Length: 399
Image 1 (cartoon, rainbow, N blue to C red):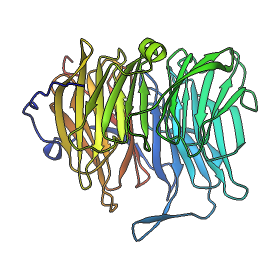
Image 2: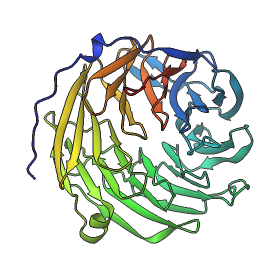
Image 3: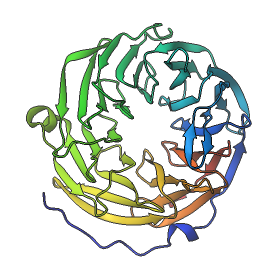
Image 4: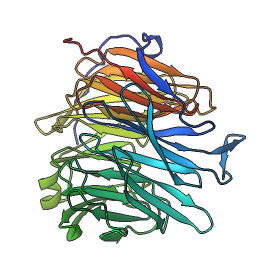
């Protein structure tokens, strides 16, 4: 498909950005990486989780058994509670609902026997779910805005549904095998009705949730060039889906068109021809952010969905390969984290969504793997390999 290419706007390059003000930072558990974080829409409730990976000559080796926990922070950075949820490698994914009243986690529970886990807690640390017999490691979790629908994915998609003021059932209410391989990503509309994930061959899957069950009807799209895809995102109302293909093409889907015609609205081939490592979608589905790992550095694309065609608003470089990205609820900011593959630090960059200008950066001595933005765009939470969870204060352009 055709695409319009617009020259990037001039602005400060990411490495020379001013330092962002740190509200608080915490190292909740020594020798644990903070590889996933979550924050409520108002930014008053923050969560982080620990994991550990042994490294040797650039490769990862299985760690010895250790305790890994989910941590809840108040607005001043004090740990309100912690709860051990894994004794092997730790938490791979973390999510919270709209007001932060429910937090969910997934990861690797044990090696012998092989098992993944899914956990859920209230904001006060009361357990709502403790399922540590998942047949595989859980790579990703997500929760609906009301905190009542939970999806988790590994080699299968698992759905949990609870009634108001009650815990989740001890076992999934619905499970669907995804075929060979592992899915790395799962996303859900705010109302919990629409769930999207990827199968092991890079196929895009869209499911409808009905009364605690995955509906028998579901929708699958196969890319022109199959391959291992890692990232997918759905808009808050479930109307738009963005998919990063293994061949380096970004596809934007409208849900109705996907269901009726099994095709994207548009496709945008990236110059690098590399599979995106992260995608983000504005709440209204009008803008798409894409992060590409180009080896020793990275590149960010910000695309607009204009009259059914992609329009490049701006692109920026990152000093190191990007590892995560998010757009806030007002579409004011694009936050990106990166990591040195040799373990020599990382950064979090904050770009103005409209202009592409960089507002500032947070530098860490450890690789940065995860970032979350409050819905109002006033707080940012960053996790890094040095075990730090850091809260950043953001001043909006109109403040």
